[in-house]
Amino acid sequence: MVEGMYARKDLAKSGGDLESRALLKDSIINGKNWYISLLEAINLWESAEETYKGKKYHYLILGEAFDWLLLAQRLLDTVAGLIPEVEVTAFLVNGMPPIKLNKTDFRRLIGGKKYRAYLNYFYGITVEKALVRAVTAEVEKELGASGRKGLLIVENEAYRRLYGADKATLWKILMPGNNAVRNNFHVQNVFTYRLFQYRLANCEKDRIASDTRKGLLELRRQFPETVRI
Image (cartoon, rainbow, N blue to C red; front, side, top):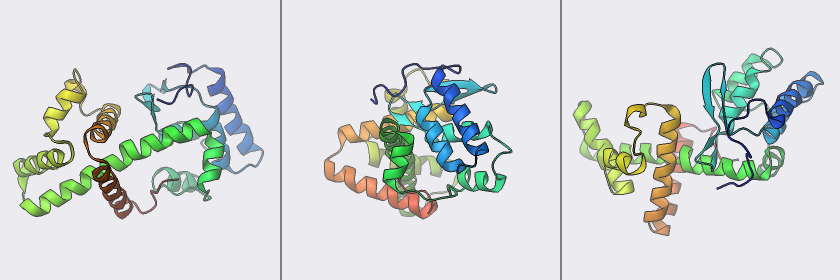
């Protein structure tokens, strides 16, 4: 768990959040690069979750995995009109910021604790989803399955290869009491992160490393711009 990253869970009026939003707006108005300003604002942000414009935002998954792009989207909404829309779209949709930063500068700007939590999200959710897609594609190619029933067979076989059980069984084990909200994006992220934790706890180190490489390759194949910072 990333201790001390967020002292409180839902504080839309917390000092850090207000300071974060004020810094972002003032920095952009004063001519600072908006991407640098955004990362500095993220560093100051405190709330792990909040309700904004009637929508629930979960920035921290299970106290460990930080969805920095979700927070970036929320913060950029507060400065709409101050930044070229084409640049915001390129960043949020295509993963292309206006300037490229190396790992050291990115970590310094968002802060060490948030950077470690970002890596948890990257490997535990982004790469884990890519790994599931890669193995599913392998199984589909092997079995040549089609139709709804065939795709369910493929999916269950992929989960068995990765986690030792079909998806429904894993959901019952890892997500008790959440059957009614399976399609919720946040709940799906929680499930994926728990799958990641489950795989780490139950697989050999060599297998973990091999699967991680497979997930990274699939991620870079589908989304070339999505690489670890």
